[in-house]
Length: 187
Image (cartoon, one colour):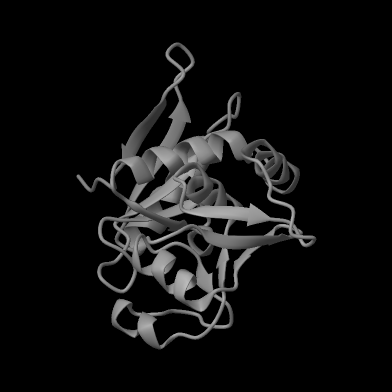
């Protein structure tokens, strides 16, 4: 990326107005969603003339990577800590979600919302429009209980949509993110 893209924080939304920068962010990592467009195939990005909306997780990641700067509505540049506080205000357990998001991105995966599957993340090996997300990742919050029915429900859903269900959690001893893959087994 030639220079940092500027993103404007409006409430809980982070918007990249510069169309060229928006295209670059999408093309180089599948970040964000073009406003008013449901799906964009990789070969159609150059034709898109819409701003890009980033999630707060994506915005913090891109800020950490030095690819964007985030400003508020008055034009004041926000620090990482200020953006982190916004994330914590709007999203429960934001720190852990970001830790998992960052870890998956660092492993080379494309991480998108998994909301339509009832999970936190849908994870691609290459990216939307190139391959289907083979993984659904649910983040276990510290101290949360996982009921057998929840596991069965998640297993059935992921099997139905032909994806592997992964539980992400922070290891209590070492403090790092670990993953537990659940696969459907038919004897």
